[in-house]
Length: 388
Image (cartoon, rainbow, N blue to C red; front, side, top):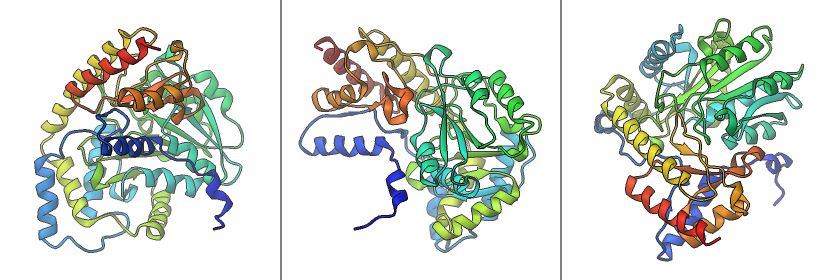
């Protein structure tokens, strides 16, 4: 079969590839500890499930407006206005099936062939994949371990050119767990403020997964509201990965264009899922608080355990639910290490290079798993490393 040339430029998300390999090993009788997939191991809150089930029983089984049902768009606008401190209204909101469509649709709407898109590296691989797919040019700003995986502002400033069309930010970050400080966000906004042709895609999907302080969005910086797309959703915060519910908040003209792309791609999001999203935002938040507290405990245990293993060092993540340890001293490259940990030790992790070139020398572990399983994984990694 002859595929279009652009398909050769499309990347992937390695987590799903490794998950499939791990599941195949389990089918053969192997015991695998899953630290590869970024998915909360908690159930969706009961009140959210009940709202979705009641919506199905109540007739929410048909098409909805492409940008989302008005009550959900209004609820999201109120939530973003309150949590980010910015004036947002329903016409700024587009509801999509998960967070990825906002990445894809906004890049499709904004980036011409040859345009440059500045993004962190290592980072969520779909950013680079989508930019390559539309013919844009990814420009990487390294997230260094020494700086707590924050933006290198000098590198960022030197990366800005007349071809820059879009800047992608992700805080808290996948895969590093790093969080941009307010000073860093202010500095980035300052460099962009006099460049009205440059938009910002701020991936804030882990905004509620912070272990200290408050979430800060670049959209709240002076002059940046009309230049920023906020990506957020329900998958991580409410353990709703399978519900497929995300959204973008953006200037109204771009929201209209993204809605047009949605019409062409997916028509709309599942109706009952949207009703559940209203309950998630408006209902009790205790389950979210409990989940974040559990992630904090797991973070402390996994980072402490990794740092106790000879040849491994790990920065304490400030957000999300990922550890990104440096394994360069082990004498084996990250891809080989990740493969051998799965096949020989029964621990599924991802190589740092799954997140870009600057992930060399690192592996990513998701601690969205129980303390019992984390302890088992640490023991297996420790035993494996000591026999290298």
